Length: 435
Ligand code: AMP
Ligand code: GLY
Image (cartoon, rainbow, N blue to C red; front, side, top):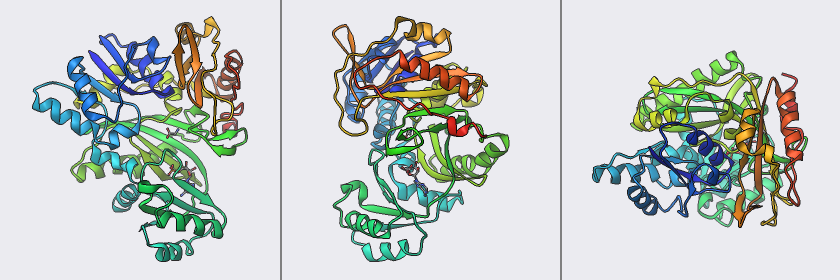
């Protein structure tokens, strides 16, 4: 089987490693990939949102399965495009991702909120406002208690959410949002919602449009500094599973959220195919949805996939071809702790091109045996050197008997990878020790 994987993060290195371990694999291509994905396949210079370019590559390289890693091509309609064109050409090409219609769960916060309201899926109370609607938006905001939560409707690379205690600041942001000067097109609709107090986690599920299964739970650490201080990042580490997401809590997540979501999408005539990432707030034991993402998370994937016993290509082809009920998702009981090594200055300005030194014993082949993995994210080859090529550089995952054990092993491994300006959090998961 020939596979094309789209993306270039730690998530895609984790996908490529797992795909490369499947006996059915013939060729794996990754677009655009990184120095880690190049260990498992061939990196190719394609733009994942250039749908025609992706399709032509698939035709020329007899691709059987396309695996989109990040949301941009999904929201741009990649799945419909490839399915329609390949079917018309009489080719058999599967795509393990949701349709453009379903991808709006991530691509439009207003769409996602309206969907949840219709299917009575627990989420924060909200209202949406269009450009120029400052007066009514401001009036609604004042009916809520601070902190105020303002969200740009469209994709804004994780920067479209503003949470502030200050009514003055909220009003100023709202003004910029509703006159169109902030977030541009992504901000044409603004969602204002109630602040949810609790502890966040994410639950992942896979579906083939007919049946679905839970993949696992994870907790992401978004702030740059220990103790959840400092600015937001793409994610500085993750833990899986989440200890408070026990059987009783997961039963609530499934019956109140996951099942009604997949059922609701079917009822709308748009059954969901692919990975579904449900961002949740545990509000005093009750799960509420913060957001949907229509893909796996990064770094959550780097924490969950090392726990996965299910052969990756079995799962991906089952998602694409509609026979997921024949595949059993099976996870190791052990805890995974993922720690991201980032470039100095991240999430602000960073310098790229720093040489990365990885001890030979920690190359992925041997690390795998030791229940440790090193996933490349912002890296690339420069001659014979691996150099930094982004803010988040390398994700290190260890499996352990518990969080403390897994974390200490990841932190130790983090010490032995060197590059100028390297920084990482040392407290990933420590807040969960009390559960
Ligand atoms: P989102 O892009 O919708 O996931 O929001 C980004 C982050 O803002 C989330 O991960 C939460 O930490 C926070 N957040 C979003 N919505 C709310 C809310 N209604 N209440 C509390 N925190 C929120
Ligand atoms: N780690 C959060 C995300 O992938 O969106």
